[in-house]
Image (tube, rainbow, N blue to C red; front, side):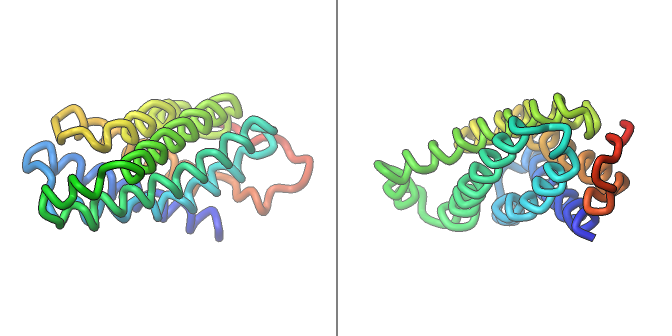
Length: 195
């Protein structure tokens, strides 16, 4: 049941990143797309847990460290995305600019860097473990860190492509996890599932 719920949440997170990203390529950032993007990280948390549980035995200590850093980074960056997209977006530009000075800017940049490092390490852990499909694992490894670093850049077609690739990777990983063996039901000492 956890696997199925995590997969559904992950698919929702991926769509909440990819669809607004694709729309913003043509319209620019808007209140509805900003709202959806601000909520997307919350839905990624269950998927991250399911992905880790499915590969925990094969990923070993490195995988556990990568998962932990990615989870902490996702929590921090999720808070930053929520703040930027659901609070500061709706404020006057001058007021928002004043709020983003000093320690607030340092905290937002720090959260993006921790998330980028965690996503990169977790992407490497997925590739090393070989449990999840390789293409979306590479997408996770590359697109999510770029997405975090590009969060404060102006919206361009390039940032829209990054959103679509990152979201598409999450959807693909979610579908694969939802159709795989539930780690809670796998017998101890069982063989690794085939790709």
